[in-house]
Image (cartoon, rainbow, N blue to C red; front, side):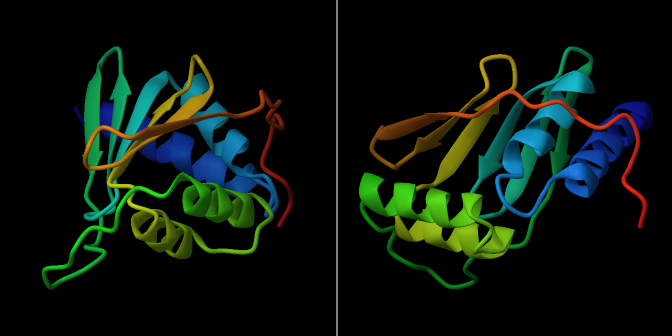
Length: 144
């Protein structure tokens, strides 16, 4: 099973290395797709990810967003879209985006690398689906 973990780790590291600061998510998603990751589930409150491949799934535990009980805000599509656009413009870090998503009532999201979609979920079945662009990855890592 460590080979599967190595594949996921390498794909996400490569995607992170080649993604531009502005509009970078499609690069990360494409690196995952090329490595055979078909779905990525992200649990917002625990900041944990599950990467799904044909060979199995890998859990990457995260850090808790909150360590004390907190009321989950109601789903707010406009606030979610605002958080997405700020992130896409490179104005937020990933933890800031996750916090903004939670504040918009998002408790999880799912990336489908074949369909190139990301679906955001609220507690009561609310959803928002966003399509992302196909991109071409560089053949090698950019020089440091």
